[in-house]
Amino acid sequence: MKNHEDVKHIKEYGNNPRYLSNIQINQRKVKVTSNLLKALYEASIAVLAVPSAFVSNVLNELPAHAFDNKMIVSAIKGMITGDNMLITEYVAKRFNIPLASLCIIAGPCHSEEIALEKKSYLTIAGTNIDSATHVASLLNCRFVKTTCSTDLHGVEYAAIMKNIIAIACGLARGLNYGDNFQAVLVSNAMNEMKKLLTTLHPDTARNMIASAYLGDLLVTAYSPYSRNRTLGYLVGKGYSVKAAQAEMNMIAEGYYAVACIHELNKKYNIEMPIVKAIYNVLYEKISPAIEIRILENQMI
Amino acid sequence: MKNHEDVKHIKEYGNNPRYLSNIQINQRKVKVTSNLLKALYEASIAVLAVPSAFVSNVLNELPAHAFDNKMIVSAIKGMITGDNMLITEYVAKRFNIPLASLCIIAGPCHSEEIALEKKSYLTIAGTNIDSATHVASLLNCRFVKTTCSTDLHGVEYAAIMKNIIAIACGLARGLNYGDNFQAVLVSNAMNEMKKLLTTLHPDTARNMIASAYLGDLLVTAYSPYSRNRTLGYLVGKGYSVKAAQAEMNMIAEGYYAVACIHELNKKYNIEMPIVKAIYNVLYEKISPAIEIRILENQMI
Image (cartoon, chains in turn cyan, orange):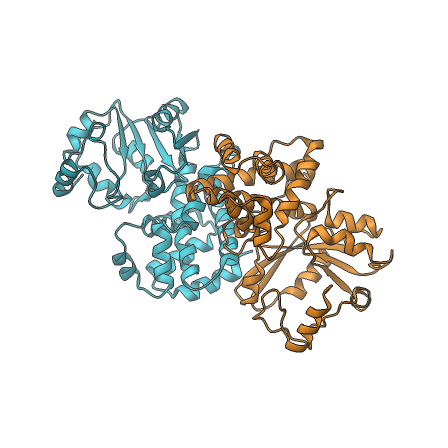
């Protein structure tokens, strides 16, 4: 952890003062440190779990061979801003390691419910199925069931898109649209996601209604725990984007993701009206009511 | 309407005493009667909107040629119990009329939100696209947008399955499962729906993530307005099925639908664990907790 005070607090009281503070951390199993290099040196598997906006800064602290002979598992649902690269693409290139050493953890899974030991399902995606299966086996437990997928980049893009879509759902709710509209919005959003995945990483075996794609989106689009949905909701209610972000204790990944996908799409020109609407609201200061009204007519 | 008192009430006060009573009915446009034959005689389009359990009784009152040269639009999301036939199949056979005279109204669309003039989308499905388009044009208005589909039986089965799935979602919620589990449940349910549709009415052009399939399911599975979800929720909380039904003012179509699909599936043997679980809970008195626990291990 960056923050020395937080490390001290956890060591002394056994809980994180900022997030899910009612959860007791088992310090025989979990060692907390602010020394990144030391933590990495002792690990055979490194899980990346910082907000996407800070990833490149954090990784820049590391020497060139930091990840040699390690498995790297990304739990980040976003892209590298500026480069518009997936986390796994970026790490593989930056540290010159094979893509097979990387995998990702995908939902559908809010940490709040995992913390409550509510039955949840994770998808571990990686190009090397043996590595993905190994990581999956370590995460399996009484209340977590894992499945594996080789569609690394497809699942990674789906997880990024879902955060943008959740902002759209929150926006519509904030503007007083109902359940009927949200259902149509999510169906159309799945179609946008499918178009993006098919263009960037075609895979005829991909099943968009599987948990790693549809399920992951549903939990984010419908759950009150969702930060991205909350960001959209506040903006829909009339908060400025800055004010809505200030209201929230955590980072809404969709805010950064929509800029990356928008930028990336300049190359592909995929028709994605929902992505476009959210970009216009968050970055072009166009009124949410106007953007959703335009969307209304594009939905089918 | 069957009930003379209700007819009298509407004529006198301009609202329905039982459902959506705060909605004023425009009696220059809507004529209420308890004389079924007379109503039908004057109409060029007949919309069937009685609960599926009563359809065959109501239709038995009609003479053989009652529907000749009329369009028939089914808004019923269920099957004919005993015969295990779709409403459109049954009406076409019973009155010896071509399937092209029939179409259906599908969601995603709760009447409560239509009544509030919240933007909603309807899919009109029929084998004859011109007829479907005609019906669609009559339903279009400021807050309702319609699309058409030729996948009559596919959309009809999807609308039936969604009610069973909504019961499953309610059951899980009643048993204290969380958003993570529900997202996985819905993804797996979409897969069951796809298998059923592909077996019964193969159609390579069918897009399961479209509003008529996925959207219709979402609004029923996630909305607090959903009767089927409420039935499941109460049973999950420990109500007996009889007691849960008595609590509700309206009929949960999924209760009848699951028996029909279960019966129909004896011929096809499609693996549908969610349908099986709901059938077992509602008809075989097996504990909801046990059935959902079994489902837990079948979900991926």
